[in-house]
Amino acid sequence: MKKIRLNRISYNPGYCDMLGERHSVSVRCDKSGNWTMSCSDRKVHSEPTIVTTYSVSEESIAQFEEFIIKNNVFELSKRPDSGIFATDYRPWSWSFDYETTSFGQVKEEYCSFEEYSRYNGHDYELLKELKKKLYNLRGEKISETTEN
Image (cartoon, rainbow, N blue to C red; front, side):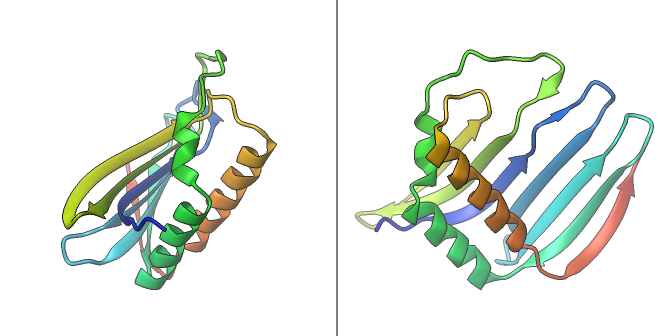
């Protein structure tokens, strides 16, 4: 099984954004090796954005990496376009920054996929489980800030 080392995960759920709604989840590793999850939420333009930060354990990241490899999650990026597009809607999307090692050489990689592709029933079940596993990374609450 090929090994990866995640550096960053980003998830944006699909939502209507005509009124300024915004949601995102970002999981990052800092230079000290500490993992955190930041959840950013806003309902409308006139309201502030609430950013909540949580701790993430190394063990949970390792399990998430195993899940990605075992289930070939990055293969979802190879699905063909669906031809569907809506201008007043933000599609859901995933992106991953990670490293692989081959023949002793570390290579930085990037993978992303979004809603406007053709997915089958198995893919949708995998995406549902991926989202569940992402939110399960969330540890103790570190902070909550309001951004205007």
